[in-house]
Length: 608
Image (tube, rainbow, N blue to C red):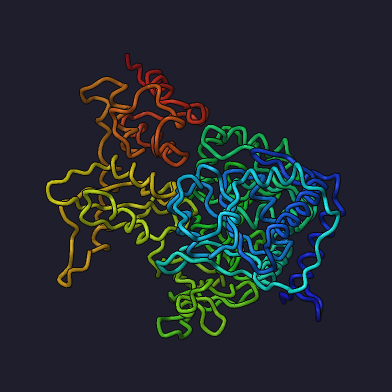
């Protein structure tokens, strides 16, 4: 039976700090992390965390304050996150790619006492009077502090023990942006579960390239590494072109666990198909996949290709990370399932909150020590999902005769695309502010690469013309990359029912049907008029949601909006269909410009 390791009479904050102190002081010479912009030891981390804590105190921050951090500087983010946790000040990690307008939105949600952000983000932000200027710090303040502040040599004693450890920004189960309050007890419970389920220990060496504003990247990244005295690798940012280097790092860095999401795993499986020994290091244990539904076909393919186990975990920010586990123990493993709960109690309830019979579908409801305290400053929203301490996930499941849980669908309107939780309503609100737009909606449809794909439908005002490329450019300016729709549909009007309500279900069905029809159509593109470059650019324009006239053989991910790793794989698949050919894994990874794709197509089809 699961039990918290906190001794009677010991406050969770003290237990948490004692473990961090023990790990920091007991591993001074050991390397802690290799990040994209810095590598450092436990000794350096210990010193830097103390210096940052002294800086917090010098700037008037006190226990229980909230500090928002939004930066592409991973070294600064990791050190701020750990120092704030240890100091009893609540970190809030924002998306490193948010726009200035979104930064103000996040501040409204978490009401921070201070802000650390990249200079370009601050220049483009409209912060009004949300914070005094003295509490808004460009991220270079972190590096200045570590250069010039003398190590105090000890931590300032904390008089008032904090309860809330971390705020996690999420759209969760409702359409309102909000922040999940996770306590120190929540974190200790989840870390203890990781110990008992995954066997994390001081020999754990994580390869985790997931975003730090997601719990999967943040908790199972720097926090797990420090809590267990392990090591974190994030030196090579994830991209299609970097997959070979990332796979090489598995053996070079003696990685024990690869932490990923289905969309990332799908790319690794395709590009790494000719590196079947990539996970064959003597200490590698398993791939841990979470944040989205892991389909059985991909799961089986990865295990058969690389001859290593894949563990699937189900969880949400509202329960820290993981609540149901399919593996690593055989008793909980069935490919395609969510496994079974550990460290929490799971119920499957109908709409009247009554348990459903075994084998029938109901809403998954979780209770236990990892369940959040609530949503920050949102008691009404909290009451809709927390009842008698139990969290109503909004996800439908059923329990099979083997006792394992299967995912059935979502009750909520939020979608999970490439591991990111997105609420379509918030995206539609931004789109509706685009000049010339009469109305807009957004919704998710099934997608092989992403799990779900965000689609936007736009009805222009009379006499106005809006192109998908223009809509995409507007979204990239006002929304983070993960909230920018992958597809735009321009319609004369949005379909409505008798009550006047937009028929979202009809639009979802139509989009899914259109995708199925396109997939079944014969590949005649290569025989149509126009040169090879024109044809490739037309396909790329569709995949990136840009104007084809702005593309050429010299177009690269660095000079082309919308060309990220997922769009790269969409481009590959669309080109393979259009030209009735197949790229090799090495070719996919080496395509750094559209001209590279054109050369490979010429070679495959002998196109002059």
